[in-house]
Image 1 (tube, rainbow, N blue to C red):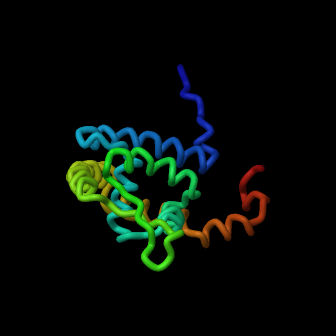
Image 2: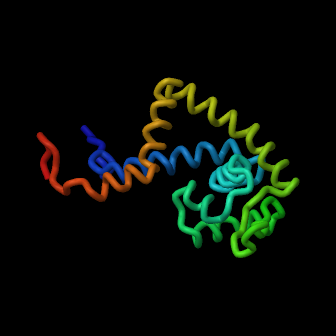
Length: 162
């Protein structure tokens, strides 16, 4: 009898999250495809819309990204006319990120598609489980979790081999 080998994701939380993220990303991107946006681009447009004129630094912090990665991700959205960087009115060194009218239209178009993907996810996993998963993942993205992780002991827990 052929046994399916265990994957590293059976032991490593990071690998399990990345593996699940790749699959879920592909499923959402398939649904978002008619908009012409990648999942990361849609998420970024949506966060920009939700953040209402946030600075680049604030947006990077919200997305748990460094500024250079955010800049790299913004370039095609700026090139395509969906996003613009505008100087802050009180400190011209600070750049604020906002959707252009074309970007607002594209974000709304993609949101309609995203709602379909989100409904499929909630229906496939179950709404209570999906809500619990989002809460857990949001908790992992908080600075307080990163601080706790950094302070935590490197030893394995009770009953675990290491």
